[in-house]
Length: 305
Image (cartoon, rainbow, N blue to C red; front, side, top):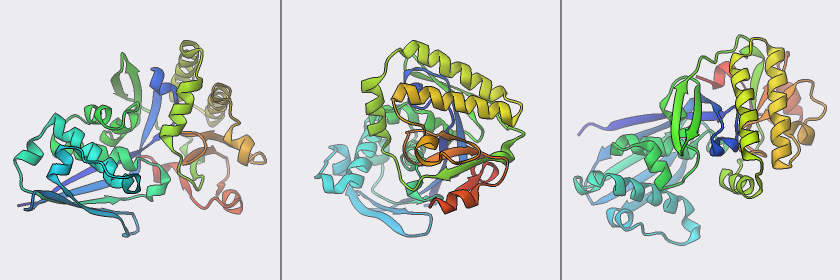
């Protein structure tokens, strides 16, 4: 039997972090990095699962019986990865049981093309690959497993920037022409730690206020960012976005916290406090960030599809 191969793009959320949950328009960018899934049919009523990091090291390997998936047999917290995988596969089984009931077993290999610590969508690319394999809707699978806004699922499926919005809790997605002429001044810097998105979202949901006003403000900024013609205009808008979110979250901006002497503009992406930040600078800022201990600085053309 021929192997089935699936692939999903990683993601970066350029605007509307947190507020996307309340219906704000979000500009999201699929990345050149992602995750592959290779599925081979076998025997044994189980899945032998192997996950590789980008450097070829195995970061997860296990055998999961079909019965564990069907009955969602979760074990102790020392097996967090296994429990998460079973939760996704169980949700997929509830939506479409055929991938288990009609087959005898699988050997599955999942391979990242980015370091899993980067926060470019280890979970969303996996979930979208599983949805493709089991022939179900990825957004429905997300809602029945992790939950979340879902923008990352649609980045996984699209090869160009998207405008994403939840309207009555349903995703509305459109491709947008966002290919800034000044992209040579845009970089992405990894902050050396992966942020726990769930904890960050929980904090936001507990402390948010003035939702309608905040959503409209971010919608206006997002619309203007898409239309920005110059790097100066773009910098002003992302500074406005960063300052506004700083007030909503009652947190200092990442530039105030870590890079106050930087001669350029910096914006948090996604959950504040980790993963990547967006940097706009007229000169290549790689040396500046390396001197600060941040080794990963990737240009726009090398990061974004």
